[in-house]
Image (tube, rainbow, N blue to C red; front, top):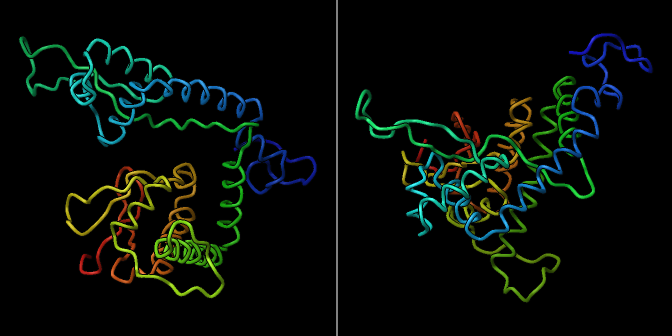
Length: 275
């Protein structure tokens, strides 16, 4: 929390005031946002190389740590070349690196620690020209929290989800060349697999739940920064958005429930028979 008082509004800075002066102090200056965009451009530029892109995708899809040998086998390239490209991705902030013995043994003869790679926790952003929608979202979320407007937020999120789900259902039932018409009847309800494919496009990265055959976990949270800073607001909004999506898509046999894990989205989708 910042000291002093906001000159225009006479409120404690960073505590009760949401004016642009205090917001800039709390969430970063424009120069910082430009730096984020520049580093993001450099990182995205590295992914233009086909081999680096395949390596990055493999690490992401693994959902955890991978070794150089595993990555080399997956992409069919030499281990030394793969190591070079993995280190380039790590230097750009796209991958995190850890050193750990993978043999399961300790002491003499157990070998050197292996270099392991996983997707970086750091978020890279590219906005041209520079934009800062994240700050706007954080400020709005804080305003919702302070004024107890969660119910209104959840209702708006549910309605937006229903709208998106209905559009998705109509699009799935139409030939690709046709256009929607007013009063068009809804098509068949979407299955859990259909919904998972749609959520993949939205950045949720759905994967089968290892504990339940008829459930899907969401490996990525598209609202990660917001969920980290104001979890009750962001996670409640996300849950209602997904529930609305299911409702609009007519997926009555699928339920969205809160099931937080250490990483990833806090919502799990499952057939109704799973609790």
